[in-house]
Image 1 (spheres, rainbow, N blue to C red):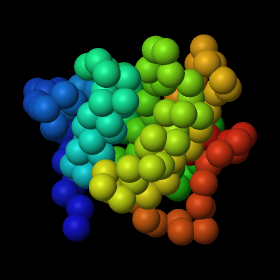
Image 2 (tube, protein in one colour):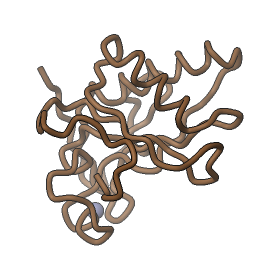
Image 3 (tube, rainbow, N blue to C red):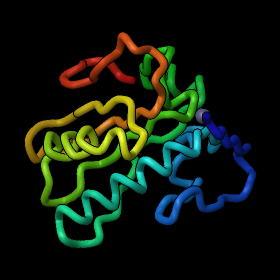
Image 4 (tube, protein in one colour):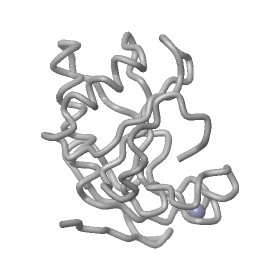
Length: 152
Ligand SMILES: [Zn+2]
């Protein structure tokens, strides 16, 4: 079951999960929002896991939630990107953690968190490290984004 929320650019923001607001998921280009509520729930679960492991409250920052088709095309995202459908988020690697471990944590909790795929972008303690978290089980041939060079 999916619960898709859509907001127009001028619609007010509201809380989607205890630590995640709709503003964090809006398209950077136009402010529109399409988000499956299972996505902020997955982010919330991941935030808790990372906080438990690091032993401190660890906010997770999104670099990308929803992308409208125009924005997705402009940055070279694949046509079938989960960001268009509101099923994917890119999450910055927290401080004092490296991206591979961050991706591994997301992968380890995938069943409890409802995560279908995890992509790992950026190297060891990479300055621009982030992970791509995808809750959609569409495109089952697309098993993993580890090391991929195209934008999902
Ligand atoms: Zn847009």
